[in-house]
Image (cartoon, rainbow, N blue to C red; front, side, top):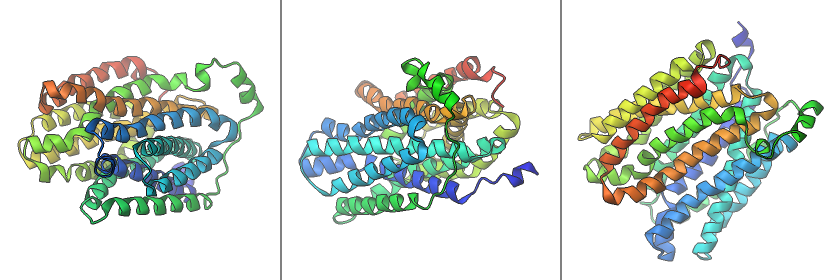
Length: 395
């Protein structure tokens, strides 16, 4: 009965989730198109085009670090407004063609904005959700990111086929970023203000603790490793699909991935609230490893899509449960730092992975790269137990 009296799907929760969804959708839409834009418009080398794409992640890390620190001082609502303003301005600047250095600066600035918005929305959601349904609620909220990671690349690749596709992308993104800014003013959230006790405690914190939440580091480190293992799938699936002649099936990979996450996430979130995270994390890591094995050995379309289902269930659900753990082990007044700590390490795994694996690729095959990720995933099982799972304060 108590769960019925503590709703998740409030107006504010829905609007904040939509803001998060659109911001991440634009992020992933540009991730798969901006390198082509750099080559076609400025005739840069492949390595510079890769930098244009990946510098966004550096900006996101900067944004998360700064937002995590400032949220405790100005609150997540003001932080969200700042992030949305910078996001709108930086998105609009894509409409001008002033050289590749200018493009790099825009990408860095927009990355900072997305990192700020993501940290602010994650903190707001963690604060407004009832404690008894936090796992379920964060699971629903993280669906906004999962759907964006699937729909963004799909829409981006479709728009590249259009005449003046880049112009269409930039104008659409500008309109969407304006909608986000307007949507903010429809959010009326009553968040608890940091009390004086917490403010005094802040002065006693070490320099590192002002930017990082130590209690969130163990699960965040595991998320870094898992993100690293998944990053190759996200980055190299197009090249891998050409190598194994499964391009058509690969075009539906992320849709299958997102579909299974949408179906399973509500159940795993509720199960975590009732039984704790361990009952979900261990199976998810095993299923992720099996999915990666099938992905690395795919020789038919059904194998690739089944791998998408397994990876979606394993990796997709681990991600939301891990984010919930990072918040649940932290005091409410440090939710912002916990959220930013988690995503700093998680984004670091996603960002560094393609760079390292890309350096290895010329000396091996994509199949070998993906197979080599399986031991890394399996190592995370005992690592999770040692760092997180054996603790009693997770339920």
